[in-house]
Image (cartoon, rainbow, N blue to C red):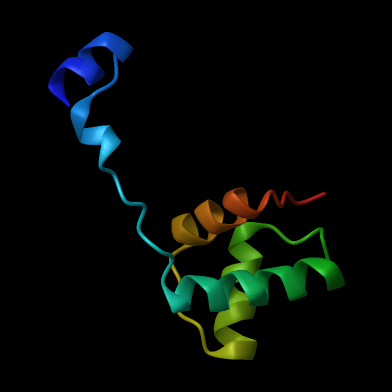
Length: 77
């Protein structure tokens, strides 16, 4: 294994890497973000945080919301 990784110039730790599955909470938030984005794509992260807390009772950090939106490819218009 060591020699193969050396020949391919790949780190040994990356060969056995198993990606971590997303948490159910992140999937739920992404679904809510998608629904909200389809209704009003002009909302920014600050407004989305307040809307999710008010309408769905989801307490989320703004930076976490930005990261999830970025993973989904959403941008405010």
